[in-house]
Image 1: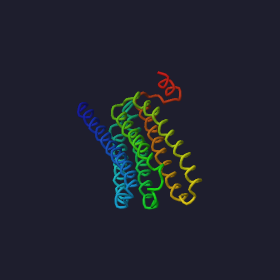
Image 2: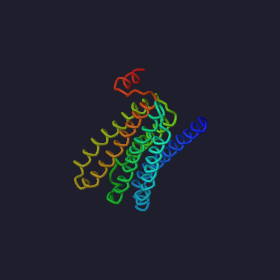
Image 3: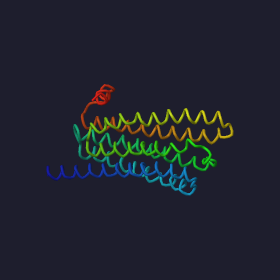
Image 4: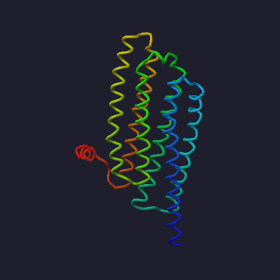
Length: 228
């Protein structure tokens, strides 16, 4: 009976990780697809991204149901309990990341003169980095890798730098080209969404770190990594 219980628990945890990985994959893909739709002004692709966000929402519900079932039936303790609780929280964060991709897609029809706004060319690199952080932090969760989680937090600074640079460039562009203010304002919102994706990746990293170590990540932890 003991072996059966342990095996059943491992299967449940494996399923939980699989659902989180599915959510992360969809969210990561949606970010890239939304930026591509923006570049091409592809309204059909943008509409698909908005519609397919429901898949991420459905997976979040599955994670919640499975996590509650595991806690109720398996009574996990210590590191196992931390992992289940972390998965529950991470699912909510990944769902929000999917919402940011959906928000970007919703703005595609509103930016009809995108070809005239040169700063748009910087957004794909920022989006690629943000999506990479999402991918890497979920890999860290699957591997219970606290050090990898710390690295994600360090790399989020690059996303912030992208945003700060874009903000200055876009504001300058609006001042020099008043007719583009409406269009550029949408790009500012898109850049902010990408910056928030990076922030959410660090939130997940903090949960991964706690699940793996039992201690909360501090600014000192991040500073020590940066120094090393």
